[in-house]
Amino acid sequence: MESEIEQFKQITPNYGIYEIKENVELLFPSIKAQIKRDHEKSFLYSRVDSEGNKVEKIIPSDQDMITIEVAPIRPLNYPARRTNFVYLDFNKEVFLSKGASTSFLVRCPIEIGIFLVHEAHKDSMDSFSCDPSRARFGLYGSPDTGILCKYFKVPIIKSELDSEPYHSCVIRLSFENLLERGFSITKVVFPITDHSIYYESQKAQLDPLQVKLRKRGVVEFAEAFEDPLENMTWAKSPSWEDDTHTPSMEMGLE
Image (cartoon, rainbow, N blue to C red):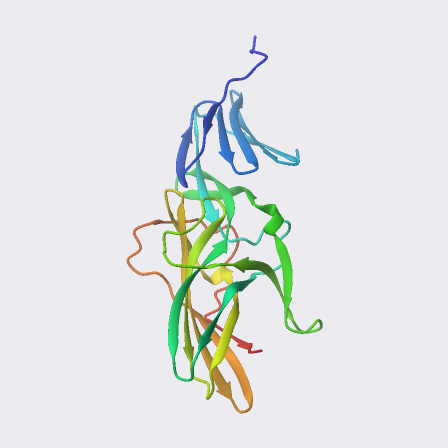
């Protein structure tokens, strides 16, 4: 006869791979996820948020354990998947004079992905935000032709290691001003699906972004390129969604 009170081993997880052999409760900010043996041929995964909303999934398996990966993923899925673009609105302006260039770091929000690992496959099983109050949409541009984005107000920071566990990663932004005037930089809008996330312990980094401010005729615009991290020793997060494979992007300036 089963015990009326099930015992769970509680873990505040780092990002990484976990072999689940016993009843486990994963503790995140505002989120509790449980994995338990539900039947001799299945496990049960459940997640409850701070408002009591619950998700349950049966994982068929006749093995005595399952393997999962807990990883930071791009912040596009909560509350619904609507866009590949993020809009990072800086908490301070950066003024770039004519011909100047600069590079700085900002925090970029993330979501958490739970992946089921089977041989060489990592299948996306669940995703959630540990800070759902920040999950907002914004429109860049005019109402009829603008780009729908996930919008975040973000701080400029000093170190690549200054991410917040479960809440944010760090991205380096590089700007080069090829305009004939100085320009105040207050935001960046880009397709985040072109960028990979890397993690170590509870730290996370996103591939950098290079932006060139240009002029073509009378039109001023920003041209953005992914700048993949090189010699990165941190683990690469699995992709939750398909990449856009967009090599560059042009957007107007304001």
